[in-house]
Image (tube, rainbow, N blue to C red; front, side, top):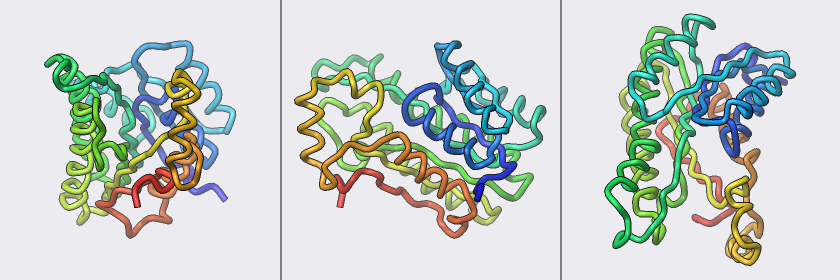
Length: 248
């Protein structure tokens, strides 16, 4: 059973890791997928071709998610070409880790812009067509770090905590128009980024998690699929922790 048959989704920051996993999962379930990327055109083309293999439409847009006018342009182009945006996944994000005493203003500002302002940009742009349709599902990728904090990640934690507050507010604003807005807080997810860590560090993380393993992009994609589909039609304003029990 394809849960997103003929729906149209936009996933920001989708050429690797969690975003890529979400795009593939949506395509598997019959969803046409537009996605944004920042740098690697070859990875974007590769993902486009992979998604098309599922018999759906796919298109990459090179865009800085932190750029307000660019977000409007991307949404407008998708609506012009495909007619709608039914699902928005705000996934784009970066890290610039460091202790507060060494963190520069630029490091703080860059993370807030990329992680939090991007969510504002695309949600504001997409709400126009969703309000017109009186339907839509917005999914914002937060983090367990936004709930519990983490030393050396005050900028990242602030951005991800902000996403949760933003999500709850938008759910209250748009609920009467049948537009849902939820967040997902991933825990330790094993991607290309974590593979660069020392194996001992990875093993320590795994042992500290009740399920004794790191998560996969597919674990997050499955939660996104649920929130994007009609299976979650009575769920809005929530933050689902997909973390193997790190937060209980």
